[in-house]
Image (cartoon, rainbow, N blue to C red):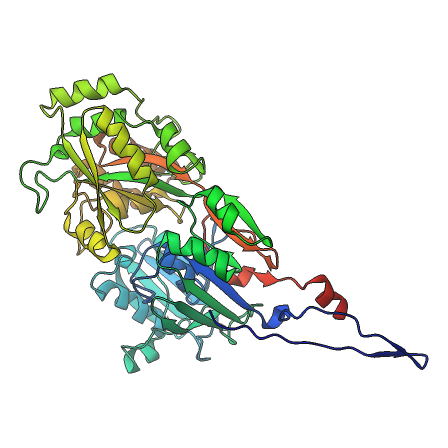
Length: 521
């Protein structure tokens, strides 16, 4: 914990020759000098703004980097570093940059920076974001504040561009190993791994952030985060989806309030559908769709909500929520039917399939425990296999698992984001399927994923996306479980209303003065 400065102000007021006693004021830092202390229960794997696609990294990176276009609090596309855009033809998107935009070193944003950023993200090995630039085949600089992005086919690319953060070309070429320079309201000042990440205000950003400094405390796991919540008393604790609300309520400080927001995230079981699981002898039972369907029938999502996440959400009907374009209101989850589940397992010739569930060590495993108990009642031999975070990630990437829990939030408010990332057949060259850990492949689903963005009629697009979700529901590469609320613990001194998309934007935050500080002003 970094020590926070304290200031004592004594005021003496003379009125008509008489001396009034000094009024008592708070010893807390004044709002304009106070550091925002944010607690996370995990640590980013990288702070390269063009590599990760996860909630934890986003807390830091969304405050230090910006994109050409962005989503507002209502999930509507709006201007970012580009003030406006046009289509000179059906394969060209022309963007007009904000002449006042500046990187954290004060240098202006130019078309060369956008070109460099697009080309950089396409060439980054292992980038989870490169797929968002897969249809951009050429960048052409019109002038220093205008750039054309040309696509391989008539297609909408605006949603994907919200995830491509723009970095400085000159700094990137001079210092390729340095932390990339961004244009956000803050810059990353330091990263003490395992302890904290510090962000300092970018004085060149307009509007300027009200809070001068952010200290992100890295707890490492859920239990450590709960302990830090009590000990450190941060101003903000985020990413509480799987925390038990009663434990948080007991451990938070009196000046903290708990805020719950219905989130965009759907949590689901990833089924490995490969014929064989690497490192596991014998045939993979989940390669048979009937086994996946049986496990779905053996899953009581009401119990998962009640016991797995302590009521902090609701059952999911599909892989996206109603606020996301493409949601199909006619879709219903598989009914809970143990007898039908047992019949299907017998039909598949696997009345007692071995279904180990991969989990991360030191993480709450309430949901997985509920699932293991439910599936065992249908005859499955279930167990939890716990691995440290790094080994867990490697097992996911290599397909060395049978089933595991994952989550995805369509922050673009468009189902195509989920289809491209988690369901499309993995394609390293095309940038598809980076989150398709189970090896699922379906020609019709791939076609719907490829083609929907080429359709500009919203009714036709909606029909295509809903067809894709119905196919996913039938094939069951993933089993939707719950839509979890986003939880935050917020200090009473901090003014902030969490948005629907879960973006932690410090530019929207401000500290409020205490009554004593307000009286002293």
